[in-house]
Image 1 (cartoon, helix red, strand yellow):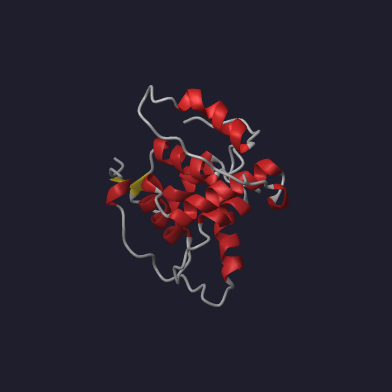
Image 2: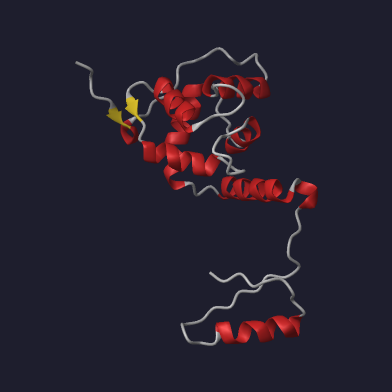
Length: 174
């Protein structure tokens, strides 16, 4: 019978030395991407299989893969291309880059992405994709936050404040 796989959170440990020190960092990123991708992009299935192959003693849940894909898939295409993959690991400074070290990093950090730079890069890349390139991104000249308890008049005052300040864009209400 097959041995039970260790739940993902219990998996850890340093990756074995892989001997890639002479290969350029970018070339290594490309090689790791190609280890995961079946073609020019990484699908959910590719990601799940790749992570489980890299960490054979761990099980990867569908929920974890879905969460990772939501973070990684910047253009919402359902697949991760090389540029999106590269953004995820922009600050990755591991000496021994391998699919295993990437998998360990990703699985340990993807449930609670709190790294401000990674969050910013993800949001910025999405904006660039939506705008058709970084050169087309237009940022607002003014951002205004209206806080207050329900019934304090935020909704009533918003059109007046916008008129007085010469704001013409639609208000974003959260």
